[in-house]
Length: 195
Image 1 (cartoon, rainbow, N blue to C red):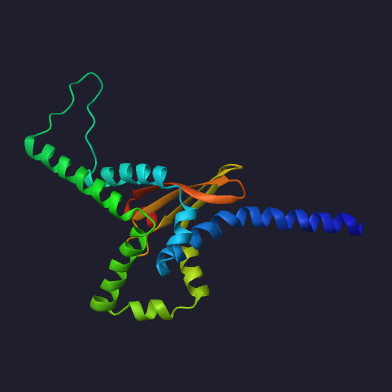
Image 2 (image 1 turned 60 degrees about the vertical axis):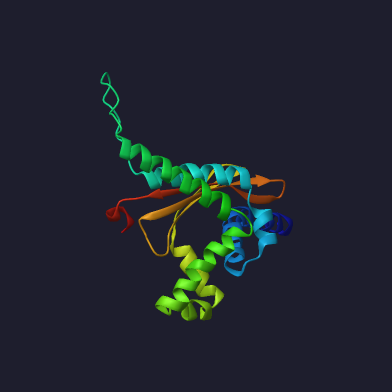
């Protein structure tokens, strides 16, 4: 009986660790970006696929909703000004992704927001003084969805701290014994569904 209880306890511990590990990986990436640990950021993210998926979703976010033609009707015409805006938006997104979606660029991007909080709003001192468990509670409260698609694929959706209508959707894949962020998307949700 004792061996059976020990085996059940060990199995339960492994199951809990398996479920918690991808969430811990997301937390680790967040903290590494916050403190500028580029070595950790580089090992936890699969850069080519993250850049590609983030570029696609940021482009859709920048261009806004597109009108779809009804079945059997010709596609809507796009004016010159709209084509210019689309081209500029795509170029801006491409430049942003190439420059900031790197191990060195993510902390820089976070630093811009930190600079704004320090110099403009004075809220950075309160955030810096926040103990880790309060940061973890804030992190946990912004998780909107977390699910396993398979034994090696885990998806998490989090609301932005400053804009609850903006959600980040990350897909983590188990590579060997380590979870890595392999896709990242941005999605906007209606304000009434964030309540």
